Amino acid sequence: MFINNPILIIIVILLILFLISSLIGLRKKQLSKRADKEFENFVIANRLTIDKEQTLHNNRIAIDKENYKLIFIDKTSVPERNLIIDLTEIAYCKLLRTKNPSNNHIHTITLECKYRNEQPSIILPIYQSGKDPAFKLMRLSKKAMYWKKTINLFKESIPARA
Image (cartoon, rainbow, N blue to C red):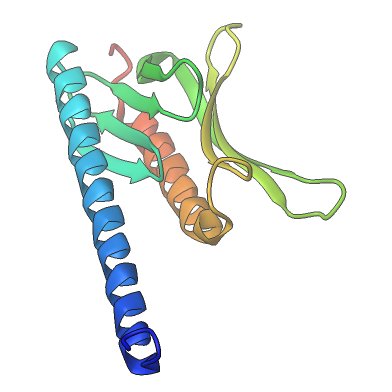
């Protein structure tokens, strides 16, 4: 009797979809809270003073102006990388984009932080086509430009003896 009623079937399907959507949203919120707590613990353990901080899909970037440090939590690499970069030793940061040669779409966006000495550059992944959704490309690209400018402007303000 209930199976033959199309309106009832539609209502049941909509309720199921609503429940699934609610569960997914709850899971995302839990993961976000856990990531926030992990970041807070990392900051406390390393005695950092965060001035600016931003989430870049799964990664997190922050700057500590008091201690001249750049913090990058890379959740996309295995194993996870937690970097504390001494900005007094960095000459500059630049934005790098690589394109897929077959379709000319952006494949990766990274920040390259070049040391003053001969140490290899540090590459910070911002967007990776296989790991990040394509619809986040534009937003992550804008965030990458913002952080490149922020880091380079802050570098100019570091006292010579720091």
